[in-house]
Length: 159
Image 1 (spheres, rainbow, N blue to C red):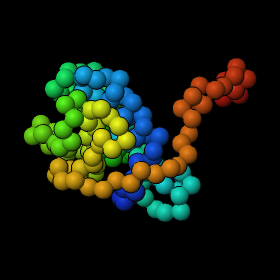
Image 2 (image 1 turned 120 degrees about the vertical axis):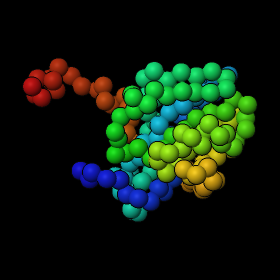
Image 3 (image 1 turned 180 degrees about the vertical axis):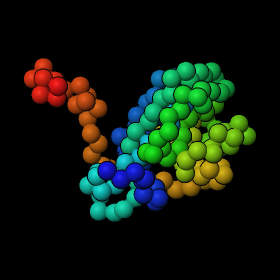
Image 4 (image 1 turned 120 degrees about the horizontal axis):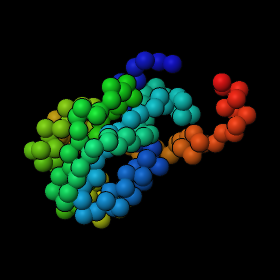
């Protein structure tokens, strides 16, 4: 296993983008916030070096209201798969605020989702708050439910 992710961020998995859009809609009118994690593109079957955003990590203790979301920084893990952040603007504005810019120091990409959270209601920004392109990629992700798919025999074998 490689310790460091590839430097080039290729895009976001379509399934991951759908997840964050749905999550933002479910928390509306409060803000939604999470950290983005990436996977090596070759592990996802792409014939390119780079990283694809595949996961969202919700930090315990995150609080939100209609105008802000606050993450407990002491709960953020050191994560070599971290690539940035995602949060929503319930007012629909797809531009980073001054407060947003102060949180853009970790990672290469920061996604803002705006109400009503449709397919085009999001934008990606770099750590300086400048717009950046981010392709939506159709890749097969692992089924998260498969993590819990085991039997007693599997446990006995592992022990």
